[in-house]
Length: 427
Image 1 (cartoon, rainbow, N blue to C red):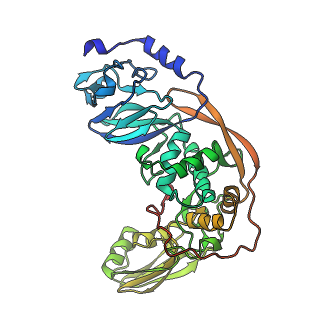
Image 2: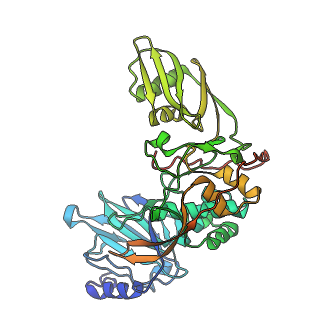
Image 3: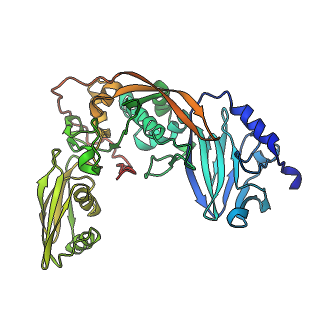
């Protein structure tokens, strides 16, 4: 094993030469974390090396394609180092850079690009380092059915690209994660030809505002009226406003009802700090501009309490509601009647479907849900401390908006229900 490890600056120089001319923008996605991880490289890779400032180690490319490597940790504190198949590497971080056509298997899942391995709290983090366009090939079909009209899928591709480019932070150990807390990223197995085509057709396009990537929040179904970022999270962004959304009408979540036992209502109220004693009533006392509860009054045997703003919506979601555009009735059970699914801020995926079916292209879809924004273009990356980069963004024309009034178009009952009605990390 000792002969497989080479230490010193020569490997780092090779790495720098290999990436110095790259114009692609890489994203670092945390895909696995465990006391030890298994990594398999099915094709001949570049040398595995430590990042700048660490001791470097390499494995012979003739061995990697046919053998899985178990990556663990030995030592602790400043003396901690990664191990490969039980042998010390002398490094706290190892990096296999992405390359054309390269894939890497991390903890049993295959991803495009390369991998960075680092020590975190005595365990190993596996971070997939992947070109942003390759990353989107897995994200887009995981967030929206690839069989939907191309304009809707293209809009999803643009907002997914915008979402992750806005989160690229070279100062952080990684940019995003692979779960619903960020954007769902299942790897190569999720890719579909139709969503691949949508990613390619919108290559480098992002939604921009004020010279920066916009906050392109989205949810499954707005319930017929989008919510503002101010009412949901207390942050007022001028392009995330409350407005009628007739194209979301008729989705599978257009109308629903949930009955919640009093015991659960009482428990959730306690989670929100209610000290009212046994509840006697739960009522909506004020609505937001979008028709969502802006204030909920909890009345109990020993007092009353108001939940307002984001807490009002959070209380409703915690009770098991799929959306927050709701009415409340009764108490035992508390009957929640609502429309839509998700937080309702930004793009409604079923609304994008309706707009696409009405003949609008993806730019009009984006212009409707993010009014006042412009179409930006990722023109490349500005390398910083490898493997992190900073995106370079060029501003374009204002995004077009559909002409009003907008007709409501019912969707067929057979339309698939999205597997993830996103509650984004900003909640």
